[in-house]
Image (cartoon, rainbow, N blue to C red; front, side):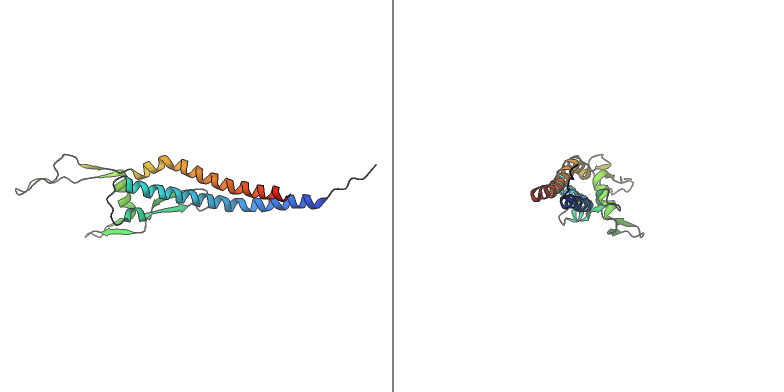
Length: 169
């Protein structure tokens, strides 16, 4: 019976490549999530300007920020909760998160009682609610498409790693 010799160096190189590839996957996932989040954040900011939010200083768009889940499983776009926009006389604070919510969903208008004899109605219509601009809702419609495009780019990077390995061998 003839002995078969097995060249173990190619086998070891193959497993080293797989170990390296497996080590790169979490980094690629994090990079893909960051790219997805940045793309969706840009879409939200564009929707803010498109939906008629009168913000000449660009504050509402600046308040929006991207955050990644603690274990790296998701990415979300939301207003920064820390910035105080206004403090009322009674000491209550209005934050950037509150203002963004009012702009997104809408808010009520207090109606004057009209008891003062010098009262002049400033609101000519009987509408007691300001409709929301819905910029998050509009961005949500395109978010999946944008996120999948960014995920495809990450998969292309992984494919390039495999192609480089096959080109070497």
